[in-house]
Image (cartoon, rainbow, N blue to C red; front, side):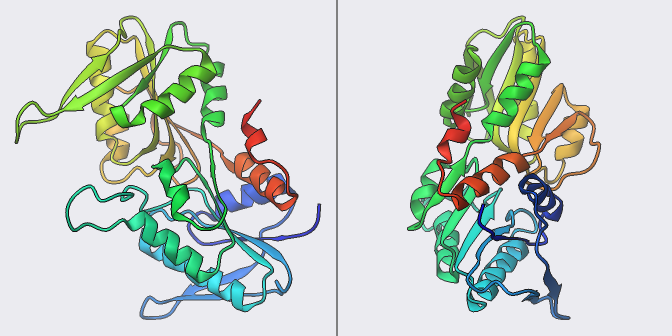
Length: 310
């Protein structure tokens, strides 16, 4: 394999190190600091002239700092004559604002794509975008990898007696169907609606979950309110157990307490975003092999899609 360089921002250096270990290489050094007024300072400490480089930086909280650091690293590498700059963004922040859902609101996911391209990237690699159409916001190659490969293998290892896949909302049905097809399980849907204005949200279950081991699947878990509420309703309808598989563990605000103290039996996430160690009822799987293999294949002009065909 021809050589390339791997860099990491400060958002998730532990994850970048795991990717480097998968690839059999070290993460290259870069000085990442802040000036006294909070401005970000970046210095690439070795030559990258004529080199293909990959920067690993999820744009998780603090989102604005991590995004700005990524943009400045890209600029530093471009001005250092890197041959190509590939932004590996395991978790793509601002993805929830992917369309005009109300008057006079931005499409922030598109703005971020424009900023990254303008800064000088040649390709973007990510996992489980919140909305698949974000791929089309880029005018360069954009690889949206599937995190389901991690969770499918984990679910199989649980040897559940009566498993069934559940989507936590109508919008996630396509993702849930992908899991159901891979595992050969049936599918149910949690339908959320408000009966009247100013009334609390009502959840209805489309399908039978009595006596079932339910697996809720989603791309991300933020405050965990929806997941925990869905688990409560599923158990009220007779589910034996409820676990959730979410690629990105944003876990903001009361999320950890909700998971620890709620009826959800287990939350399974990946390590695209740093999380608390040994959090109660939370299992963390590493996505470093998916990212590492994608980088290897991209660099060697091999098919990325074939990673997920087995």
